[in-house]
Structures are given as C-alpha cells and as structure tokens.
Image (cartoon, rainbow, N blue to C red; front, top):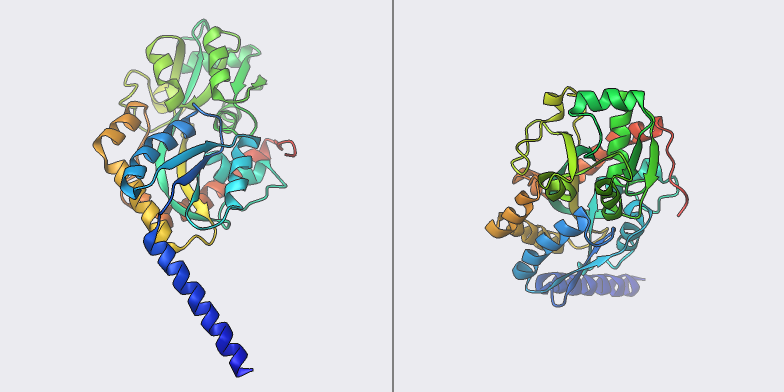
Length: 326
C-alpha cells in the first residue's frame, strides 16, 4: 500500500512539475481568442484591437475565432469546454456573463464558476438612437412619441446587449414596441440607417460614425458624463431620464483550471495593451471606456461578474423573457 501511495505521489509531483514547466514557457504557439459574435461587432472589434498588442507582448499571435450563436453563449460554451492550457481564451461580455443565466434556463456554463477571469478589456456605453426621419428632436419628445405611437425596435437577437439594454429602457419609460430581431448588430444598424426600423439601444462602438455622419439621431448616452467621442450627445440624466444608466463591457476569460501563472501572463499582456498609446487611442476614438488599474485585475473581474448576474437576473425575469432552446 505504501508503495502504491508513493507511486501515486511521485506521479502527481511529476504532473505538477510538467504543468509548472509548461506555464513557465507559455506561450509556445498561437492563442485562439473566441469571440462569440459575428465579425465586425463591438466585441469583435475590441478583441482584435487588444489582441493585436497582446500578440506583441506574448510573442505569439492571438488569433480571433468568431463563433456566433444564441446570444454569444454558443462560443462561450465551446470556450468553457476547451483544454485549460492557455491556448483558448474568450472575449465575454455583459450578455454572456451577466444576462445569460436569466435568459437561458439550460445554459451549459456558470459565468461565475466555470472560468478563470483574466481581466476587463473595455466598457462600451449605451446610446438611445433612432432613424433620422423620426420627428422627436430630443429624449423627452421621443419618450412621449413612443408612448403615443407603436414603434419598431431593432436588436441583435435575444440575449444581445442591444436587446437587454433596450428592455431596461422600455421598462423604465413604460412602453411596448414591435421588436425586430437581426443576426447581429450590423444588419440591425443598416436597417435603422435605411429607415426600415424606428430605434434601437446599442453600444457606442457601433454608432459613432453614423451619429457623426448624421445618418441616425442620438437622444442620449446612458453614462454620468458625456463621451469625448460624442461630446454633443447629452447624457440620459441631462436629457431627462437619470435612472437609465447602463454600459456594456467586454472581458477576457480562460477555461476553469487554467494555471494561475498563465492567467497572470495573459492579464499582464492585456494590461500592457491597454497602456499602449496607439491601442488606447483606437479604443477611445470608438467611445470605449478603459478600466483603471484596480479594475484590470482577475479578482475584480470575478467579483464583477457575480454582481452583473445579480443585477440582470431580476430585470430579465420581470420581463418574462426566455430565449429559445439552443
């Protein structure tokens, strides 16, 4: 029996030594970053921007793989089930790691338990926007118009940021609208610009160019202060709806069990990307809000995810929204 125990102990020590050596030499090959949405959306754009600089820091390419479906949960599920060796990471966001548990009763992962948090990448404030032909000139007029008329709302699918944040908005102003679901933000925004739908709530990263170009009308940004990227757009507080404060976010996660040394290395690479002047400028020009030093830690992200699940669950359950089975 002692010989068996000794053999098992030795085998365990060898396995630990091999894992430690792998972590120390990490990375030795390209890293796949799963983006659970189609190419061109805000999560994809942010992942590619930070991934580009992370590649320089890590000495290996960070390759973005788009795995869209089910409000982002398809890609995140695949990532959660990947080998925890640091060569598969995920760019999750408010929907996949905040709203999903309330929307998907059969969700195959637990946002707070099945991942190793790496760090926050960027916040993306929400704007209320409408087709430029809509007669309302400001947010107060829009709310009155929405209460008096049946409007159509574009969103990128159940569980998307545009869906969940507009659900909060409609609940606060007490209106019901005709919802038009799209396979991604791009097609939804195209129809808004074209006037086929009336309004939407979405992340600033998607909307900056269309607002600046006068293709759509912006009624308010749901943050305490105006965005430097859109200084002429009032905050929702200034516009008369102070209770509507919401910003989406994107963050990197690794599968549960990824060695701490590897998570630390990835967190360092992300932090270096967010400190790089050129990378910062690209993100800030899109209207993104970058995390401070405290907010960049894995521990902060882990606590933040728990708070986001607790925040969104009652909002979505009150609305009685359940996503279709995947």
